[in-house]
Length: 79
Image 1 (tube, rainbow, N blue to C red):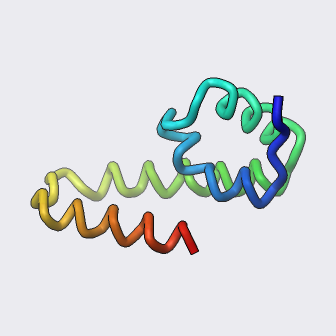
Image 2: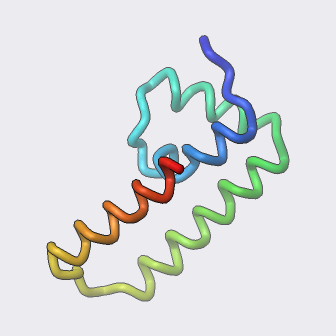
């Protein structure tokens, strides 16, 4: 079992929230969040932002726009 540090946990908190990680990664991050107040705050912020977005966005964006936004997010995360 690989342990995640704070930097790795915070980088993956979005994917964690949306169950987009491998089961071992999910488990390791769950453990880290339970033991780290700083990362738990980051997770709580991500949860809050997702809730605000869900309440505010009741229309699905055009497919091309969604693809551009996701591509840009992935580009930013890779740097």
